[in-house]
Image 1 (cartoon, one colour):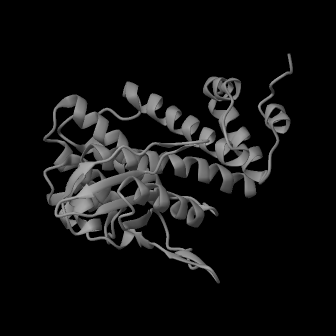
Image 2 (cartoon, rainbow, N blue to C red):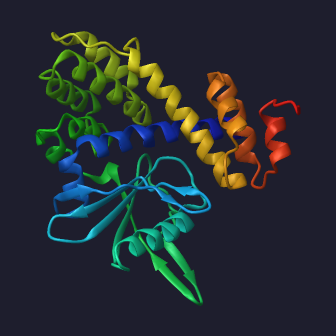
Image 3 (spheres, helix red, strand yellow):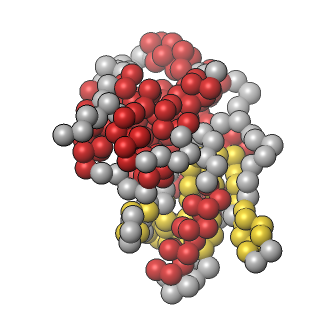
Length: 283
């Protein structure tokens, strides 16, 4: 049971990565729903000192203001401290300006969702919203196909009708963009246990789609798994040695699942213990 939950978190990071890619490449309707304004421009999200910190998205909004978004589908016990750390880094870059922070949660609502840090000498809060509470209308009406893909996560009474509406929107795209978007839809549909519906409706479409066999699908999925594991290793030991990163990138899908389970179970990890988990032999 525990191993399955851990694997679910690894796959969850793939959902996060898929939606992060959509947000960065073109979801104006979603961002307008989250911020209440248009994004003026995206901001680089690398903060390097002792280690590299990379928020999911930072943007300057039309009319002023700085907005920080984190995407979460799995359980992340350290989310409140990451948000706190990101707030300081982002605010400092903008001359100590206030930052609006939001965690957009994918999947089911959690009763124990953390929303801040409340200590005697520290009171810090951010907003948490669930994409399942959103109306899909603005996303489906958006000129951006990436917004339409995200509509699979919004509230819905009839998932089959929702899939049909999204595919109808994607059918207007060129072949390569159409297949790329359809595979991202397939990835995100797994969160709603709707992947079989997507596959079935794709087969019924007059316009041809290619799922899974599309060359970028497996490549993107593998990259997402690797990125998730490297990020977890960084959290456990503070940095990722070069030989460890190389080993992770060479791992099979089964290796990545097994390594993620072992590392996720270890709240504290030494470099030697990490090498043992990854089957690295000392020189």
